[in-house]
Image 1 (spheres, rainbow, N blue to C red):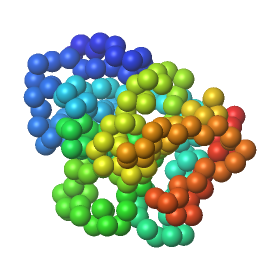
Image 2: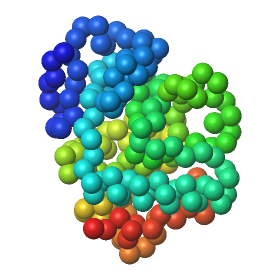
Image 3: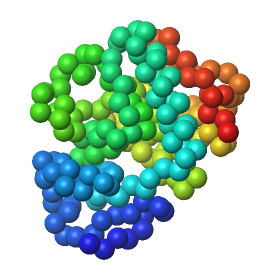
Image 4: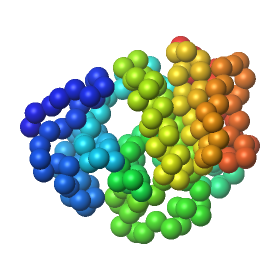
Length: 200
């Protein structure tokens, strides 16, 4: 199979059969190649995702730890990590760096979806920008989350100490004070991300 660059270092897989794969075929493809991590665009292109470097992995872990800690206190939903895929209404399959699904939405998952990629959009997602990510591409991805049913989405650029906040029907907000916590209210009551923990 031939690889071609999209936005480095991720790659789009080439092959006429790829863009015609059904959801079930794509899931099988991912399982047969489980040493790799993939996403699928709404147009059917399959993207081979690059592994994160150490600092990004450490920051991802901190974000998920804080989100999980809040969720265990409030028991309002379920948290998943960056290896979890979601089929969106537009045909894409995406895996956010961290996500939270309300109990109500999680209860609608069928048993087989729990062992596959659910046909659902998380209520809340966090994407963490790494050095190789283009901001324009990530902002487009955040808009995709919102238009497919996400209620709150944060794009965190920890190196620039900036967070881009997205909500349905509202313009992008920018938060630039990593000395303060970032509130998830009202979508996630009581959740406050300690941004200073993401500093080098």
